[in-house]
Length: 308
Image 1 (tube, helix red, strand yellow):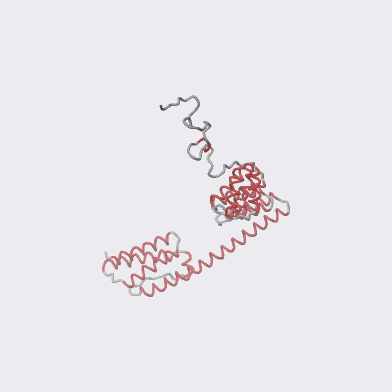
Image 2 (cartoon, helix red, strand yellow; image 1 turned 135 degrees about the horizontal axis):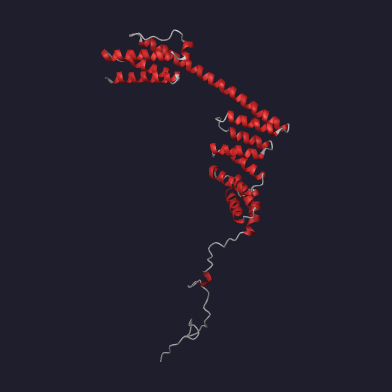
């Protein structure tokens, strides 16, 4: 079998397989490619007979699709020598159906987003009406129905936090970070929620997690410095404030923490070794032995050699 015939057969097989999987657009694309090669190739004899038979099978499979029955009730027929006309028809079908499917997809997406907006607005209205139980139900319904939308958990968590449902917001914000650990909005909202709940241990973990994934941003370092100061973790408070001031000496919050933590932190002077006073050499302390001829530097009681 020539390479051309082999390629044509493979594309026909793909067209049939995609049609059986209900993937009409990819089926038409494979069929279009097969017809383009068939129109240009010079395949004769048994190979051509086999290809024609396979093409008929693929066309029947494609035309049995429910969409094709509505679009082209008469189906598609393969006539030897008219591959170019069939290619043009299939190509046009592929383009038109692709445009129609994309338009339908966009319309469905817009409809879904409108429904999601209605649910979220209704939930917020229930919070204003003090019906927190109903608000929770609506938020949960939105999360379950539209869970594939990126950033939804983060959005719900932020809305719940703003509405005062802080404990419930933590659940959604944690789920948001499981999906996307670099979600800046989710990190910020989670830290705020944990601060509001008065849980310093979890708050510290949340801030350090944000620093890990988002980097050492000034806001995060200042929050950790303030938290550490409140927990009397002087060293960490001082270190975080110091890191901020190294990049931004005008940061008032960092300067405030720095000034409060500095007196509590022991920092030996730079370049001075605790053992320097006992070391020998020219820089050491002078010997306590009396100076004078013959006995200079000799310890008390040591024998003195006299030369005659």
